[in-house]
Length: 134
Image 1 (cartoon, rainbow, N blue to C red):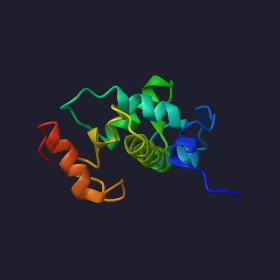
Image 2 (tube, helix red, strand yellow):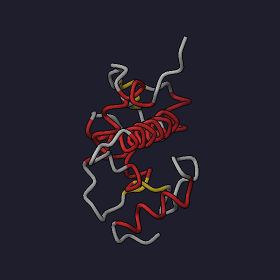
Image 3 (cartoon, rainbow, N blue to C red):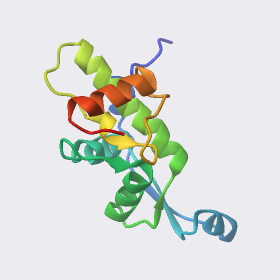
Image 4 (cartoon, one colour):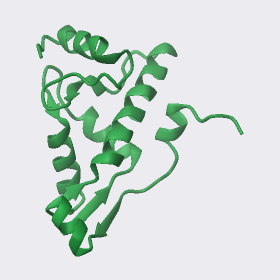
């Protein structure tokens, strides 16, 4: 079986799910409900961040949860999907797309994420192109 591209992962058809948490996990997440976001939901939330502005990963998770009626969004799934969105955007850029999802507008609490395409230097450079210093 061939490896899926990031673009294929982005459009895999998964829907967001909100789960009621058991007491142990509710204490862990400080929430009673947890969103497992969909790839397109994460992409749309990132795409809504205006040029020249930033959102922390924590803020992204909060916004996703609130939009879905949950109290928290899964940090693991949201992080994986942030990377899928970034990789799909870079696939689009290589394919000649004039505009791509601005994945670089999300930071890890004000720092570039070295796990995203091109590493921390690329993340920082894309922000600097928009006039944002981190």
